[in-house]
Image 1 (tube, rainbow, N blue to C red):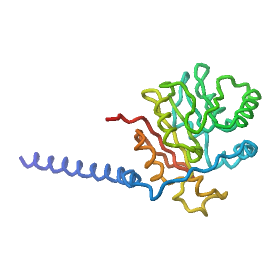
Image 2 (image 1 turned 120 degrees about the horizontal axis):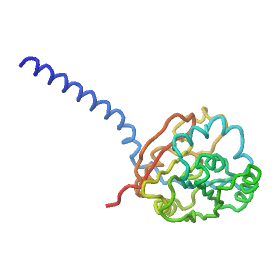
Image 3 (image 1 turned 60 degrees about the horizontal axis):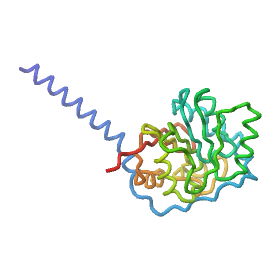
Image 4 (image 1 turned 180 degrees about the vertical axis):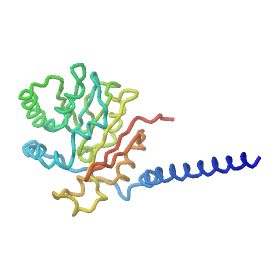
Length: 239
């Protein structure tokens, strides 16, 4: 009898410790879900004439593009959209990960960006990237097909985020995912090696206050990047 009571006490203590651990993991995310302090004003897109900055060594050092893509666990045959593709800094990398049966849809709202991207595709001999000229409200992608959508330092520039989020939901495959990377507005500006305007950064609260009401749920959050948030979303079931 004493042994049974003793074991029950141990089990209760273990369950209590597990509950504390889970609570500790959930608390920061719950705090993020508080409403953003004020409505965010989208930033102006980078002009295609200044696009060379998108290929700077700064990105390789601080953004860790290969590690970002590693977390997506892409496989041969995946269909991936790179929204705000610019010169294809990520599109060219994604094309190698999706294999010969996969495809990358490089979406941008500036034809000048896509023209330069096509030159880089030709130089690299890559054929499974499809440049797409979208607009502020629509990425112009086939519905229900995208296994992954990647947005790196681009969502903050979307002029009509509510409409774009609805379209992103529409083009995702049933089990599709979205990888969203944005510079952290919470971080001390002194920690940034280059000056980045406030409207080109987002707080976690700003991100979640826009994505969760739009019908997405947070699947994962990675904090290995020195300067950026890394969110993974999927479509939430709408009631």
